[in-house]
Amino acid sequence: MRIVHLFHSLPIALFAALGAAPAGAGELLLDHVDGYTLDRAGKLQRFEAMLVADGKVVATGSHAGLARRAGKADVVDGGGHVLLPGLIDAHGHVMGLGEMKIRADLTASTSLDDALARVRAFATAHPDDAWVIGRGWNQVVWKLGRFPTAHELDRAVADRPAWLHRVDGHAAWANAAALRIAGITRDTPDPPGGRIERDAEGNPNGVFVDAAMALVERHVPAPTEAEAARMLDAALAEMASVGLTGVHDPGIDAGTYALYRRYADEHKLTTRIYAMIGDVGADFDAIAKDGPLSGYGDGFLDVRAVKLYADGALGSRGAALLAPYSDDRANSGLLFHPPADITAMIDKAVGRGYQVGVHAIGDRANREVLDAFASVYAKHPDARGLRNRIEHAQVVAPADIPRFKSLDLVASMQPTHATSDMNMAEDRVGRERLRGAYAWRTFLKQGTRIAGGSDFPVESANPFFGLYSAITRQDHDGHPPHGWHAEQAMTRIEALRAFTLDAAWAGHAEDAVGTLEPGKRADFILVDRDYFKVAPSEIWKTRVLQTWVSGRRVYAADAPAAPPAARP
Image (cartoon, rainbow, N blue to C red; front, side, top):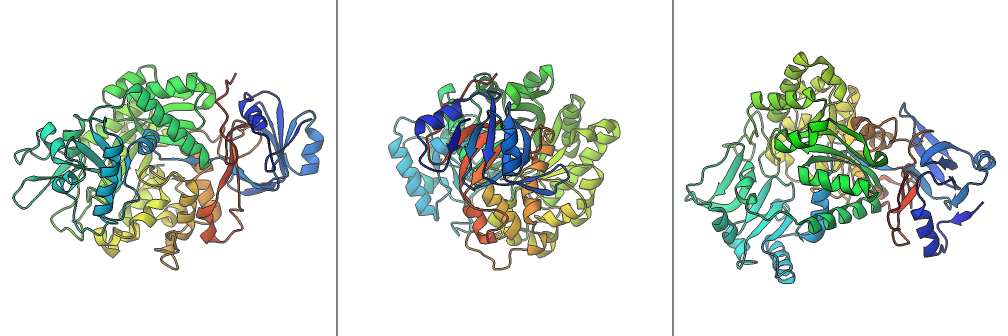
């Protein structure tokens, strides 16, 4: 029996040996831990030790009881640290997260001038890039009171095109060179589902909302294979470091599908990916020709869902509302598709056996999607069993919330959206419409499952930020003091369930992951504080010490990551 003290001075070579052990290569006893897991019914269970074999949980229990059963198992001494099930982000854009690591990152910019300085510095550091590409700006945080302009972006980079997505991904900012390359003039019409922002004379001012972004993006060079691999490597490293053992990736294309399959074949995935095909067009037809993909690469890749869009985002006033924006009375947002088209798209996907998740943020968009699912279910009653979802369900008319339950829909929601949006949400929709906005308690009370996520890179990939927001409805400075509309907050167990058991359920994986019950995959994390005992204000500060997937360490805070290991 080999005893490993993970939190003392462990030689790097031994960390590498543990990390390189293939799943199924003998037994492992995680001992001296303060372990928590939910059971299938959502009740909290505690344990001191966990026995793992063949990458799956054999048992959890007391130190004495499992030590007797351990036999020749390698014993990993957890040093009394807290052990939790691996966390699952039910809505995170993997390649977008990786792109943020290699492109201009404006998420921390505090003003227009700050953003321009960051763009200028990135352009100077990357003189060979044909385009300056980035993401993360937010005119609300800048307190600009308007969108930025192409003329302003020219002050940072004028020698080549620049294209910068807003933080929510539903608007983008171009400089004059990008406008010229795309051929955008005052005569360019707004496309269906999109809007070109214009100055007082009707000239394009450099910002494109939702479907209008395609007018420029079709000219932006696609990442090379090497760049795409760098993005995926960076995203996998980031997800492992914050304790994500699973992610639902909404909206992949054929190229990303091929990359994920290659990484699965080469045993390079360290986070389980439940991928959702973007739309039901040519990429769907190509990917879906052999039907849904489940449990590929030893359970590391599933492609059995489709992601559709009904509207845009609240911050860029693209979310489709039943009445005009409170702060823009001439604007009710944008529907991406006529109702008949979204119904036909859902019909096509479920007819092929694919779960559907539809992005809907505004109350009009949510109502249209609810109507579409009701229509499709009349034709395909069995489609209810696909566990279809509405992604975000952000602003919903109170009368429509019960329809999530009657239609057996999952509410795929992102708690940090509430605490990020509270600086502008009431300005956008007014206090009355907020009664159905970010309404987690209302959904839970009626028995609707909430699949917790972040929408990274729109928000941080750190799931402890989401757990904190779900419980406190405060920012990291503790504002507002009692929480923003705190009547909709979750309990600690409910929040953990959203990021474990119910996220797993939303991905048809509750029999394999989401809890640490016997027979399930040994996906777990060790953290530096007790999620259930620390003050609420401490939850977002939680630091992941170890991340393990199928009983194999994929991240350690105090040692370099071991190379991916071959799995049987």
